[in-house]
Each structure stands twice: as C-alpha cells, then as structure tokens.
Image 1 (cartoon, rainbow, N blue to C red):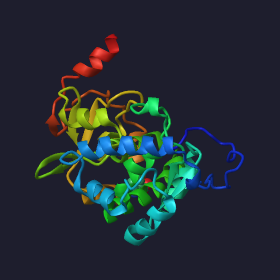
Image 2: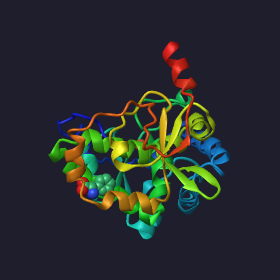
Image 3: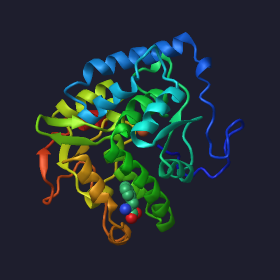
Length: 288
Ligand code: PHE
Ligand code: FE
C-alpha cells in the first residue's frame, strides 16, 4: 500500500521512481530464517482457506526455496505468466508513485523483513506481506489486469479528489477480499493470507460481517488498519471484480460526493449477507 500525503522526493540511495536494488545477497541467515518460519506457518494453514489462484501462484513462483526469494528469479516466471514484475522499494511510497508502478505492471515490494520477535504484527508492509501476500495473485491473468487498472484508476481518483473512496476498494479487495467458490468462502486478500491469525478469523470467527461485494457500497465503507476487519466483502469471481471496475467511475464519484459513509459494522437493507457478525471481537477490543 502507499503512504498518504508524502510529497517529498525519494530517500537517499533510491531512484527517482523510489526503487532500490533488492540486494538479495545481503540478507542474513537470520532474515532468511524469518521468511522460512512465516512461509511454513502459512503454507500449512492456507490449503482449504486461500483461493486456488493464490495457491497456484505460490506453487508457480516456488516462493519457499531456501528463504527470502530473489526478485530476479521471481520476475522471470511472473513476466512470462502475466507480464508483471516485482520491484524493491525502501518502504511505503507516495500514492502517485505507487499508482504509476501498478499502471506499468510493476509491484513495489518492501525490501526489508520483520524481526523474529515481530512475526505476528508490524505497522509497515515488509517483504513477507508484499511478496508472499500479493505476488501469487499477480500470476492470475484476470487479477493481474485488475491491479493494473487500479493503478490507472488511482491517478484518476487523485485528480478527482476521491482517493479516499478508491482506497477502500483496494482495502476490501486486494488486501482483505474473500472469494465465493463451490467449496465455500476462500481468501484472496494479501492482508489476510500474510497473517496467521486473520487467516483463521476472516473465515471462521462469528464476529465480522461477510457481505456480498457491491462497488459503491464498498467505497462508502471505512476500514480499520490496526485490527481485524469488522466486515469482509465477498466477490463471486475475479472476473466479476474486474468487470465491475472497468466502467468509468466518474458518475460513481459524483454520487459518492453526496452520499454518506456507512458505519463500519452496519448491515444495510440492500446487503446480501453471507454471515451476519456478532461483532463480539470488536466489542471486546473496544472495552479493553
Ligand atoms: N474504472 C475506474 C475509473 O474509471 C478505474 C479502476 C479500475 C479503478 C479498476 C479500480 C479498479 O476510474
Ligand atoms: Fe498490502
């Protein structure tokens, strides 16, 4: 994800587009071990939870190997599959830089990895979240097109002053999306698959609402960045997600400028409900 409100140039050592060398040969064994620990934990948990395009992408890119993947190696396969590449950045990048990379089918990934004592939570996306979480879905041709279109849409939304609405779409799809399948709900969101606890919570916990994806509804729904989500949106297929977003958003933005936000835990009369949550988790956290 991108950093809000940053207008300064790239940090020292970074290129004008904020990319840096991954410097793969410089990772320590301890850093590789963090990757392996996280990878093995998630690889055990995700079959039957993550969607097939994600699990297939994980296989296709062979992301486990012996530790942190070398972008040069991933990029050969990813470029062949969908024309995407992964580029290293020092951390969060300004919105316009982020969108420009996506629009050119480049995914900016944090170069650093979390420390062994931060396996479960960290504030800024690291290489495990960015590469394990996001990159497998980029092997899917439809999702690959969606991400590029999102980058183009981001630039437009900035110009129209509606980036806060579009950011919610990213959040509730790319980061925290669920997919309906004949076998049940499956995860495709990177924020979920890269988190052990949320991989369980998002599908199994009685607390959150699980609602059918509706574009305008999603863009009116605020989100939490500091805890499990209170609502997840379920798409019927990746194709349906792409199709819903190919339309010109200008009339939607126009309506959104006059519409009110929907409270995060609300279930609206028009919502198609998969699970009506108890919100017990959110309530217990608010009381703590
Ligand atoms: N179609 C959107 C627009 O007109 C752009 C977009 C595409 C946004 C895909 C998000 C995802 O602005
Ligand atoms: Fe992310």
